Length: 204
Image: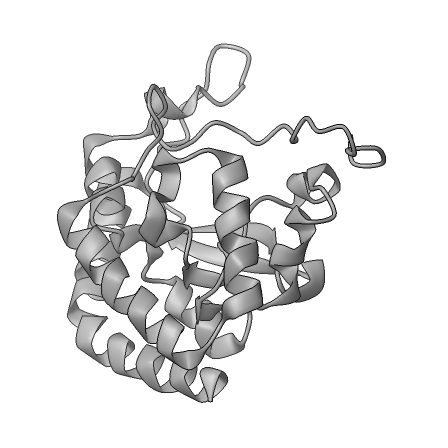
């Protein structure tokens, strides 16, 4: 039922948002250049890698040594607008149709975080990752990594179709209010460097 809901809703959203997808794609090309889509490998179900798609929100500006500038210098006002209303996330509907993502599930993070998780935190990969999730409707990037992972694992242990529908409705509310887009003093969120616990052995 969950996979059926993912496919049906994603197809419907693709049709509804087709004009917006087209317009945003043109604007990204005009304001940020090519490629239009940001493509990055992320861990999926059971940690298996896949390529996540988003609209670009940053420039490729580099310093004199050819190194990319910090995110806050490359994120344009246009990119901030896309992030504010989650328009940059729309291409992930393709990931849902491909089966890489679900509409609802723990957000897929960076591959480099995999060895940093505690055994409990790693349970977030026991389900297919999602475009939105329980952590996203309870603070998104405005809460700590540890709080996010607790919410993710809670979802893994309590997921139901009714809960997924509730999360989708709460997500719409969050997007309209533009809540939790970034962490304090960061354009998005600070990198995860691991959780310091007494039983962290083997996860450093």
